[in-house]
Image 1 (spheres, each protein chain N blue to C red):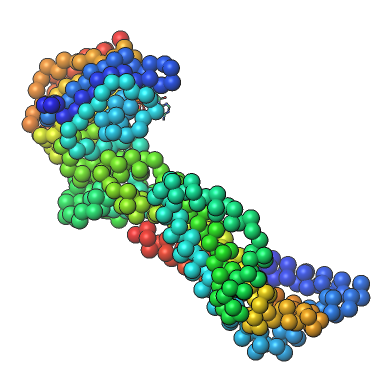
Image 2 (image 1 turned 120 degrees about the vertical axis):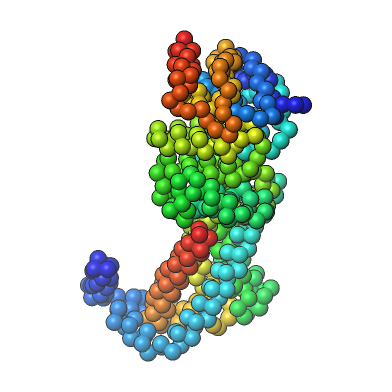
Length: 234
Length: 243
Ligand SMILES: Nc1ncnc2c1ncn2[C@@H]1O[C@H](COP(=O)(O)OP(=O)(O)OP(=O)(O)O)[C@@H](O)[C@H]1O
Ligand SMILES: [Mg+2]
């Protein structure tokens, strides 16, 4: 198949339908932003693609043909490992030798160079989220699933992390779950809205610059953001 | 420290008071002073026996913990093995060690071996069950992560499940450290002439109650110190693993 991932079907929680039948196909590169109200099943879709257990029963098919990196909504940092240990966990879990220089670069890139040897319990919520981001970037996988990765960050740091992710994840397939229309407007090559009645594809008028996020203050980005907001309120 | 001291003094005073008021004969309840005397007079003998008991306790504890921890890891790997072994383990705990000690002495002779075996039996269970509990409680988020990262079962065990279970193992070890001396003493009661247990039985048989009390006192102190040392060692181990 030419798609990086396909989710086709519907999900149930107990006897109630979570969402109407969806058909989501992710291309081999580019960012797809998934928006939707809380509890509608966005994380469920991500976990399905990652091959993880979900609270829902899914009827249909899920396919992926490449290795996945997942930054889950619960960052799931390992409490007894310091920042570096958390970032390099994947390599150790696969029995590979983690590259310390690369880990250091990424930790620096997410702004935690002076915290490299801190334990998660000594970090703020936003700092923890950035550790999880660095860990996901360290994984170096072609298909990257991000579940509200910047939700705990201040506006400035968030914009920086968006720039960083757009840069480092260039050429890969990214599925980003977000509640923030501004974020979707900056990063999305495609934007899809998930509601109980299924998926709606949102038109994205401008191309995203290569390996970068759109400027946060460009008029067309602000217009798209407002457009999305109206769509979500409808 | 102040309150502990006050408590000890109160207990000693009550003890002495009961003897005065009830006029208990010394072979039923020796006075604190005569116990202290017995302790001093027999210090060489008591020390020798205590050393012997301590060696059994330490060996039994190390062996029992290693065995318990290893079995917990094996059971953590295999749900099938757990299903088979769990009832057997529980069943094994319904047999009083007192009943097993004579048989073990019969099999293993009058030396250290049966005492160590009894200690192993006592230590094994709390360590194994606490550790197994911990191995089953790895945070789901960590397991999900490991699955997506493509980790093998062995590495998940080594890098996530075991470290996550270490606090549970520590609880099991601390508990086992308190019970371990009981195991050794039960073994010594049944057979052989060495160790605090043997000394107690011997002294009891000759109505030397003050010596029994002195040996008991030494056993208690030894247990407290041993448990404390284990707690410290466990805390060290935990810190080393954490970095
Ligand atoms: N383990 C579970 N058991 C039962 N129901 C669950 C479980 N996990 C999630 N659900 C239900 O499935 C539905 C979808 O959950 P999901 O986490 O996918 O929502 P979401 O769209 O990611 O929401 P949010 O934006 O708040 O993160 C929710 O209504 C939730 O109650
Ligand atoms: Mg979610």
